Length: 208
Length: 314
Image: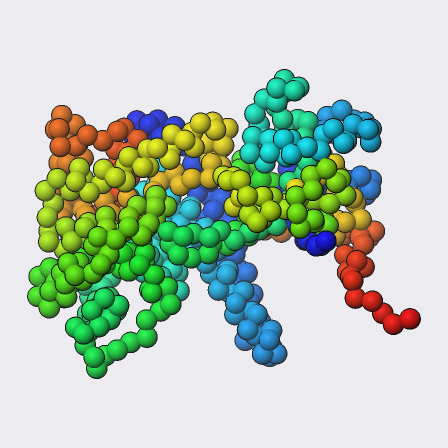
């Protein structure tokens, strides 16, 4: 297993709502949970399918024939930005797509909002596709694992499932887009007092 | 850019402006990060940390240049003067990193600054000679070739940029050297893909030769048809996902910088009237461009126009 640092960019109603993700210990939950308010473990298994992951990554706003609603409203997945490298064969160079840029782009709703909240968090990744296993995230940016062509590979996405637990979130940062100065400014950093560092999962063993 | 052309592309001007603002803001933010890295590089660091910071600085520079290029490409649809400035800034950084693509961008956006810098012009031409015809290179002036220049794509951008400098054809020695590179390089028949559209390198080589030879006849219909048809295909495919296209979030370039840059270079080389006549003669059978492709070429024309009367424009 791999521990991966990620950024989640969210557009929230205000500072309190943004901090509540940490303060209420709710963490970051999927849109499906948000939409129906209550989910049952027995339902989760049916949601975590390869088809749904493909809809989430490649057809997020398409109408899901199973529900008649936009898939985004009922997705059990959570997109996280990790950055990625794009191999540009035409230019014979490798392009870097940083997590910060992607998180700001989505957090500002494609440049339509001026404030966004960035959550720095970690997830445990499986090195192979394991969509049915709730406790590991999917590295959909990895072409060795997810081999079918996706137009969105350069978003550098790692996909968490159902919830990013609150103790995986290190900080919440508020970023303001200063349109007149044309730059992004970090307004504040809100650390999570209950954060658990991933180093705890290290596989280096001490002597007995 | 006219409302008609924006309509052809299906681009909402407000979204395009948002995207240009976003990428420029991001680039400015990363530049502040570079200043911070520079400050740390100026302090004592262990060799390992120093090396890591230098590597990180390189990534940040590439990120800045790429974001400025993206901002410039979006600005091409709404504000040419701004596009010119952004693409010029991106070009300067790429050029400093050893990518000839940067020279192509600066020539397309701002005109060449090589006319007044004969040493640099001579060095750039000799770099092409060393790569293509080492026997003709001035042996006493062998220079280190930047790593990226070993790739055919970067050589194509360098050749295009040099051949579009207005006074190169009249400088006999430079003209002969560039002509030899155009005619004798294997790339003149090569299939290596270049640019976001992935067109074969031979197109770029042929266009460079036309620019050098001042051969403006039927330039757009002869040389730009392959660009416009592939661009049109890409845009129509991307527009099938209306949500992403309308949110300026589709993973394709809204303005293909190679095509736009080549048209701008052609105007600098041939003069405005020669290209304008081809672009606007709608009834002329020589130019049968789809509306989307026509909008792309229009951007190149307007980019050069935005620079009229300024550095390097004829």
